[in-house]
Image (tube, rainbow, N blue to C red; front, side, top):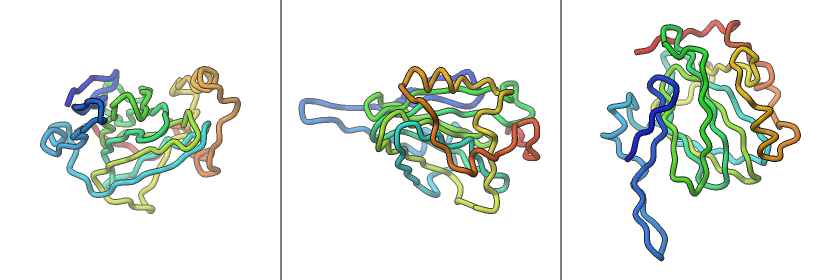
Amino acid sequence: MKLIETNLLDCYILEPDRFGDERGYFSPYYIESNLKELGFMGVKQANRSKSSKGVVRGLHFQEDPKCQAKIVEVIKGSAIDVVVDIRKNSLTYGKYTAVKLTEDNNRQLFVPRGFAHGFISLEDDTIFQYLVDNDYAPDKEGGILWNDPDLGINWEEMFKDNGITSPILSEKDGKHPRLRDSKVLFERR
């Protein structure tokens, strides 16, 4: 597995090995021992979502002690994955990265604990997969406003470049607080 650094501390693009021929390919996309070094504590839950083109999900996290690290990938379609470092003592606090994930580019994103996570679906029927290292805890759900101007995420350019005229959001995602108004503080470990 190849690790590619992003502009955020502790957040990596993962490129699992892929062995293929005219029949197709084989890929060991999850090897626990490789990921423990990054701080991923093993798969507690595997989730999938299916989204139409233009759906924006996020920016989500879970509060301690149910905080989650994630390995995310697109298994059908394409998306731009967006993560924000919300660890108060991190040198990249308040910064984001955006990574295009497709069913063909063999990329995953490792999202550490203490990051807010979201994505925009670039195609109808995009299937997004999450491997998480802690259980889902609805009472610990949190979020940051997806278009918080302080974060500087260039959503408009992503929409324009991908033929999206208006994003499709849940009511809940449109009501999250801005980062500066969030009561949740994570620490870099």
